[in-house]
Amino acid sequence: MDSPAASLFFKRLLSNAVCQSCRQSVAQARHGIVQPLTFQRAAGTYSRLKKEAETKKSRKEWGTTADIWQPRSGLKSQDVVEEFKEYPLTTAEELRHKNRRPRRQKMLMRDFIEDSLYNPHYGYFSSQATIFNPGEPFDFPSISDEAEFNKLLDDRYHIFENELDERAPNDTRQLWHTPTELFRPHYAEAMARYLISNYKLSLFPFNDLIIYELGAGNGTFMINVLDYIRAVEPDVYDRTRYKIIEISASLAKTQRERVAAAGHADKVEIINQSIHSWDTFVPQPCFVVAMEVIDNFGHDAIRYDLATEAPAQSHVLVDADGDFYERFEPHLDPLAARYLRVRDAASRAPYRHPLRSGRLLRNIKSRVMGGRGADGGRLGWSQPEYIPTRLLQFFDVLQQYFPAHRLLLSDFDRLPDAVPGINAPVVQTRYRRRTIAVTTPLVHQGYFDIFFPTDFGVMEDVYRAVTGRLTRVASHEAFMEQWADIDETTTRSGENPLLSWYKNARMMMTV
Image (cartoon, rainbow, N blue to C red; front, side, top):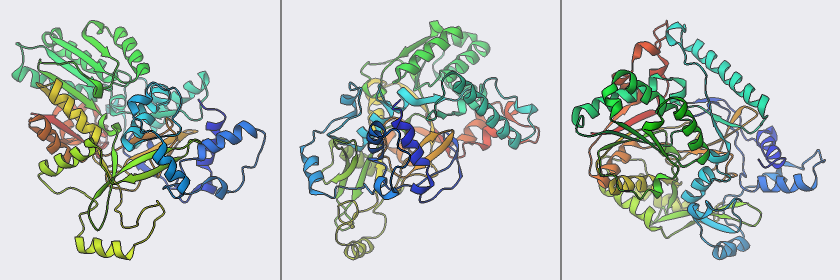
């Protein structure tokens, strides 16, 4: 890790002096309790602290808040405008071969996000993320109620992290949990019942049960699914082939070790690559499973001229000091332009959009707010809209290379404490076991999780338009009521955390 600069960076992030607000909320997402801190400048702080750490390591005072946290939301100086013109446009794919964070370059917002999360050398999932393992599965029928479950979970969190700290103390450990781990094995077994039922209904015995799982984490979901099929449906298990498409080399290594220990090695193939680079044709019927995967897909940020309704696309500039600047250019790249066309043509119902207010109201607002804004552009621009362009490319892969697939997908349809904008992400990190949500996606690469809510109505329509396949959407609770063994996750009080948790999650299935 980038010590001591990283430590100083996170200390500043936690300091009350740089916070505009500090509050607690329960995020039904990865980290449980969230303590969001709002600050002005997320871009250049780390690089500045790194310089100070390198030259003034013994210094106790770091100057005033104004010296460190300056607004950095636009291209305000002519020098930076010239840099924007001169710097080369790069992509996350090109940066995968770099072991240092980029300098003197610019990229689209989706590439900045993807590089921050998935770069094999410094990305969040490659170098920082640790998935919580609660140990033995919870015995829900012996737990009095949800309050006791919460306490037990909190205790196991402390035990798990204490054990990690005994081996290697780490103030910036990025620890998060998944429903697969919390409700092991019941969550994965519900998915297994769904897969078996649909397989036996239309594919057995003429075709194998072929499952592709995207982003398998520690491999727990895979093991629980295969354990269940082996125990309950041995004939189906004989016909099962399980393939994982995993972008993280370290997680792929963990998955191989765990599947071998579980006795399923002859059933499993682990493919260490991104689904977006997939180029192998799969003609056989198969199930594609994506549990909390698409929320980390790269998004593009779009603003609209309130008078003309013309869109502009976000570009992120990284200067020589590692500071970030965001500039909206009036020309859309082909992928962003295509997404907007497909969405407009395919959507069957209204969706949230920055231009939903009437034209007259927007024109008045544009005239009243004429001039220059803090972001260096006219104040007559809308708030940003984040569009899931990499999700569109995922659907392209399914249509082109998996023509007989059936998709089983779960993710969040809304998230608390998101950054400003429509369909905006939550951007958060952990420092000394505290979760901190910030107000911009332009953050030091690798130390922040960046994850988005999904508009399931729009996603369903776009998926249908691209693949030509029909779908069904259900809430997490409704899906679990149908496919899970509810008795196994019901507490003595009658409360059921498997149903009451993840109220902000939904499922989409190909029918």
